[in-house]
Image 1 (tube, rainbow, N blue to C red):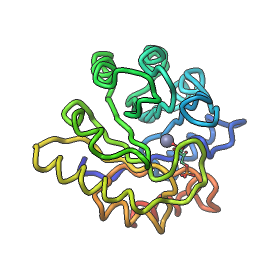
Image 2: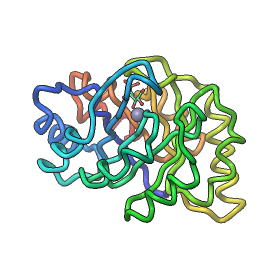
Image 3: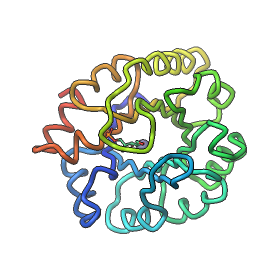
Image 4: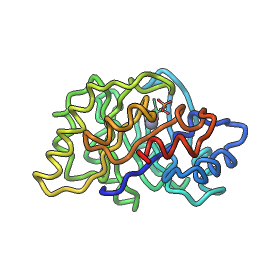
Length: 219
Ligand code: DX5
Ligand code: ZN
């Protein structure tokens, strides 16, 4: 978790040119691709499913960071593994309707990295029991469902706690932030201890994507 990782979010890309958009993100300095899966139930929007993950996987060799904003993630898990996900992140909230510990174990048993996400309204305490079972903690910095929303700076208290507990317990999970990350808010995230920065609108919709990724990285 020492290296800074920038993960452009496909949600902000041109869906008519997914392969080209992914290549553009990689060529612009993106390290991972962040893929937002929304089911219209856990969040109030519908995005895309395993077929899209498979398409990105088939056309590019990039690390796929799959963010499941869905109910019953345990049920759909095998399909995202088969589609080529490298990291699968599930939500801790009861509305995601699964046994969080069992799902995290199932993700790792499938040979994939396991992430756990918490919404802005969710207390940090709810993820604490799972911190020794994860490869990444995702602190949402917007209410999930849509790209292009404003960054919630208050969430940095959670990032700081996640970094402190990691050091205290000798753990090694990544800390990811997602929502409203751009060249202005990225330094706040980095200073708090986040090392994986998801950025949708601020990268794909930038006039110069390469410059935007560099600026988010702090270069
Ligand atoms: C929000 C998604 C984000 C989204 C971020 O529900 O989880 O990954 O793509 O978009 P921006 O960077 O535009 O806020
Ligand atoms: Zn996301």
